[in-house]
Image (tube, rainbow, N blue to C red; front, top):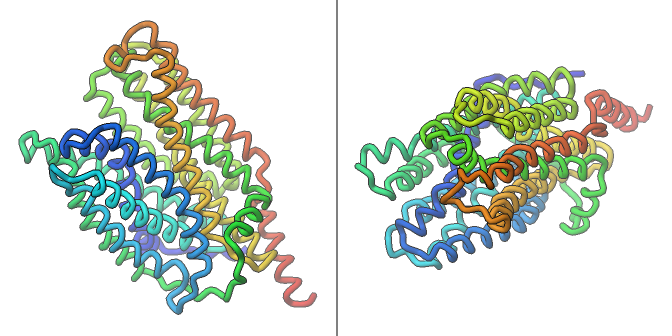
Length: 444
């Protein structure tokens, strides 16, 4: 098979917007709700309702943006113009959302969130969809998404360090960390998008049939492999959401770790994610993306089972399990996107219809929904079980936290592995599809 390989420097330049993707997502879930309720002075319930409702609206917006991208036809390509347009939209939303001052209204929060989420969907879907079409080789696709994940993790590490540095400079100003993250994002988003847009040209796509969004969506859900892939992606998103929601209670309350130790272990987890991304890409090239995802999911499950059985006062043991999970975690971010690109490629070659952006929006939306349900659902379950956040170390909470922070997420990763155990798209099968298409077009 002819392999279309992109140079390392060119690939880093193209994936530059990935630096901003997680750098936006982490503050949205960790820092901003507290910032708007404590520093800005809005009611905490109203802040929570705004974040939840806008996130739901955003999930509904993703397929519509995906359809619009698939229908776009310009001399600059389909996804390149959308990526360029995402920069001003997202930067404006970030400026409003992160640089708010005391006295900002609830309507201001809603407007800021809607603008930010719209820009976030644009930059993510345009980047991932364009990346899916850079190569027709499944192995090269896995390499492309590996670089995307590496830069994503670097951005995540950078934004995690920003509040701590800002707090030292500002001498304890509660809002300084959020404002610092905002200024950082306002600078890097347009710069990274500009680098990506100038790094490559996108071929002009052939005219596409005008397919209704609902009809296209139903057709895609019935395509071989799509439902399995969405199931696996959703299960893994639920698992990670549960871990992030409960693990701090578990580590500080039951395992008697300090908050500083827990923060250090989180950083080690991200460092392991960064180190694991190239290995996952290599594994996908050797075994195929489906099999690599199975092993990655099972590795996460094993690490979480070990974490669930962690003894108290054993920070090195907890650090080891966190590093193990982090090393395997890139599989859940890299491989489903590469596999969905394979689905899009197979469908385009067999039917002539290209729904790359819509397929990516389904994957993007499944992860968003999983995170939203797991974060909110875990807190609801904890409350229903009589959990007291101020007394997380109580003996009666131990098994509950071990199940929700370890055993249940591990089971979800096993479900994800089972969902793609016999995934229908393999490297050899895609080669057969291409050969059949070439033979038919040549009249042989």
